[in-house]
Length: 109
Image 1 (cartoon, rainbow, N blue to C red):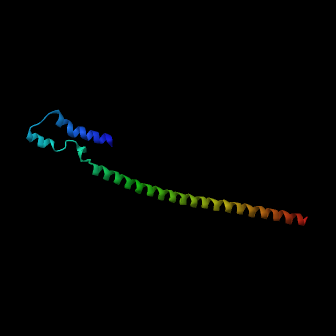
Image 2: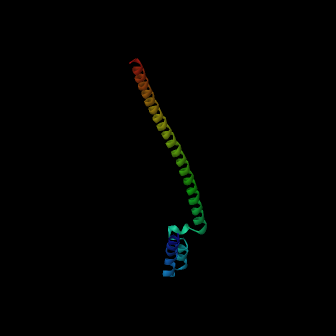
């Protein structure tokens, strides 16, 4: 920001200091030459305010996205856990059936 203000001062006042124009041309020079001349204290302050407001909006969006990501990964994790539990349950059922069939086979002998 200080560089911008310095550039503004150079653009606005360097031509005036270089030569003393006539009164008619002096009126022309009173119109700012540099496009950055609209940066006054108030406009810089309002830009800072707008930037801060934009920062707050983006920060809240990031927080929402992080919560959604946690929810999403939680659901995926939950689905993965459910699948793993089903697989373990299926393996347990198969093992129990095999044990029972072995037990019955041993009793018959």
